[in-house]
Image (tube, rainbow, N blue to C red; front, top):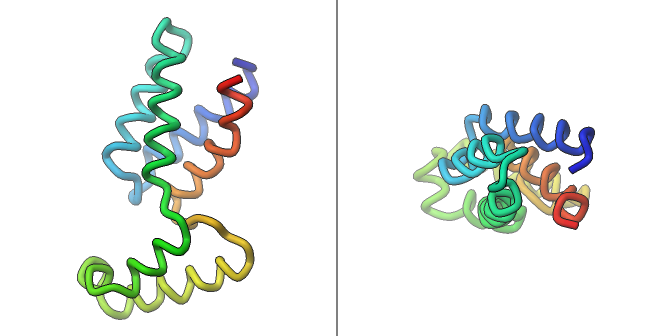
Length: 119
């Protein structure tokens, strides 16, 4: 893997790990990938990492639906859920495809490099 690309993905992976919004699965996958870089397990861990990111990243419509649901209100509280839904609609109207929380933003940045890494 190109050194610059490796540095970029490593940096974004650390951002993901350090994010308070990162799921346990994504955090574990990022840590496993970082440990595997430069080893015989790198290729398999890279595939696992991307699979985890693709399953964890929150599509914007899913975020809106969740924030407006009873589960979203229970999770965030009524005021926060309303604010999150409003924000999500605003960024969707600007072209966002995914949630822009720190974890999803890092995941999206990493996923944009998928074709460069898996070639």
